[in-house]
Length: 205
Image 1: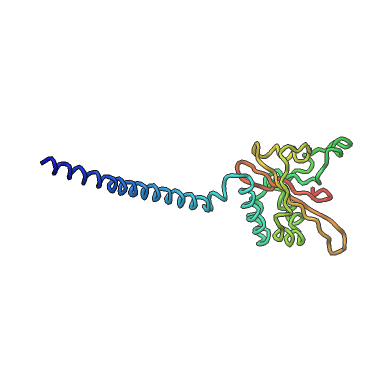
Image 2: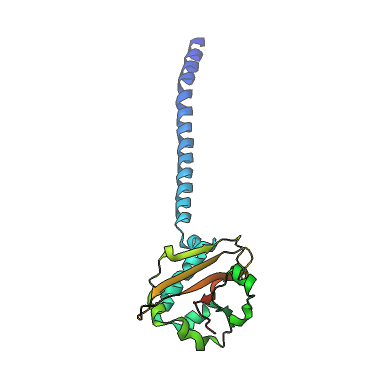
């Protein structure tokens, strides 16, 4: 009888490691499956187009700028009008030194939504319609949030607090050989990027 009991104990002792090993593998497999699921979920979120088009100012601006170039190329006047913030600043850019010697009245350059149609052709000239859609990212500038330039500080008054300003400046030579330029400053107004200023070497208005 005692001999039989010893045999049973020996058998149990031999089987215990096998049982624990099987349970351990099962738990390990479950953990591995969970880890794989988490990685797949993360990868899916990382390539989500929604995540790329919302969030930072830069992501929102890039999306806006692409639409802006497309609208200019298509000559979509109605869509372009919606992409401007009014009243729109149209004075030539001024510097702090110029403000010290000759104070600038920023209100002189503002045009309303009702006035915009009469200046549309002066903004979107043949040259502009050709140059804007061909604009590259290295032609864009991000305005430093700590800038002390009065021109940009004035524009920031109509934008969302803490948001970033961006600028596109195009320098080119006209058919008559004269060098000239024009530019736009973009800012976030009520959660959406808009054109908040247009400038050229001489007043638009």
